[in-house]
Image (tube, rainbow, N blue to C red; front, side, top):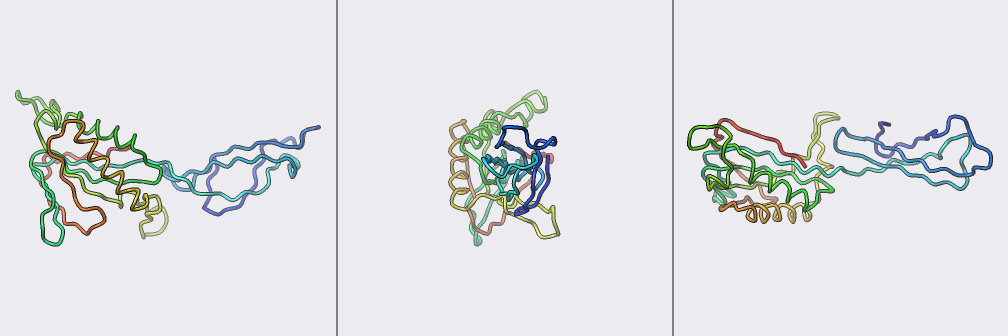
Amino acid sequence: MLYASEGLTFGLRPNALGLRTGHYGTDCRWEVKTSPGIIFSFVELSLSTGFLFGNCLPHTVKRAYDGTMRILLQRVRQAAVTVEGMTIGSVDRGYLLFVGVLRGDTEEQARWLASKIAKIRLFEGENGKINDRSVVDIDGGVLVVSQFTLAGTIDRGNRPDYTAAQSPQQAEALYERLQDFLRMEGIGRVAAGRFGAHMDVSLINDGPVTLLLEK
C-alpha cells in the first residue's frame, strides 16, 4: 500500500523488468490511503502510449471515502435534548444515540445499524441476568441526536478535520431514514434532536454503558 497526501503526484512501477516486447500499454490498479480508516483512493491507468521502462505516468491522487456510518450508543435511565431552552425530544429508559453520517454512507448501512440497535441485548432480564433483553423487550425509547463531529480526525495538528462528514442535505436525509428504520424494528418511542441546530443534551448514563457502532 502507498501512503500519500491529497494532490500528490507520483509514479508507479508495475513491471520492474521494463517494457516488454510488443507490449505498448498496461493497467495499474493501486490502493492509496490518505487518512487511516477513512480516506481511500483507487488509481487506475490505462495507457496506450507513454508506458516506458515499466513506469505508469504520474497521476494525481483523488480523495474518496469509505462510508463508515458511526453511532455512539449510550444506555440511559433518561435523556433529553433542548434547543433555545425548549425540550424537543426526550426518553426515559433506553438509548441515546449520537449519529455521525460520513460521505458514502447509504440507507442499507442505516437499516443494518437500526436492526442491530433494536436487537442488541444490553438490559437485565427479570431474573437479574445481565445482557438478557433488548430495548424492544423492555419497551424502551431511543433518542437520536445528529453528531457530525464523529466524522472528525486529528491526524494532523490540533484542529479537528471534518472533511469526511457527509454534506448537510444528504446527512439529514439519512438521519431521518435511520429514525424510520428504528420504528420499523418495533421501537415504540423514537425521539430526535434538531438536525444542524445547537443543542444541549442531558442524560443519565446507566452503567455506564457506551458502545461505538460502525457499519
